[in-house]
Image 1 (tube, one colour):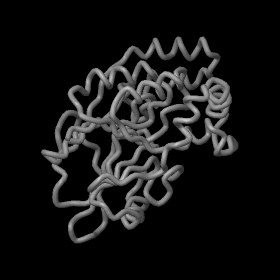
Image 2: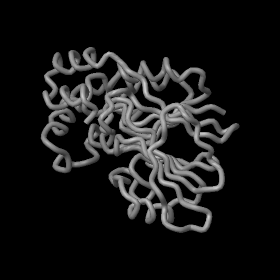
Image 3: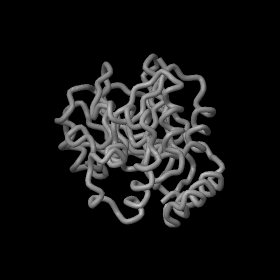
Length: 242
């Protein structure tokens, strides 16, 4: 099977469509949460993913848009965007987001948004946090999003300390001999200094993970955000991937 692994779309339909075109062929989508929040197209993104065979877990922005998290935990721009998103979401979109689980297991893979220890909120950014989290899933691999950074944590066979890796774009990485935590980066709001949409292809026949980047017309998303009165900082950061 060939899986398109995406995360943190953040209501950026333009970036999402670029990824869908670039990733073909694929058999199924695995989405690691945050379909909505920040961007101008929450209903469109929720509807679009349902055009494909897929599974999806809930992210913190999905919960915030439903009122399941207090907005006090978000910065000012995110709070403004969430208030707009709450008003914008249709009942159909709300129903879809409400049924998303926080954790899924698919064979050798655990899927969460933040971390296996705290699926909604924890950021996995350092080796200490990664080491703790390896004990919170029993599968060989855990797929995470949330940080908007494409990253891998690899634990050796003897269970020592993990090492962090930034995958090379377009180079399939073998998934054998090690336990790993894998992050495909963000489709709709990358934060590693590269504004291109980030995603991964997981090939379970070859057992490889391939990070990919694809450009998209950022100005279209920005114009849609301006038309909806979304915060200027959220609009500007798309250009620099921060």
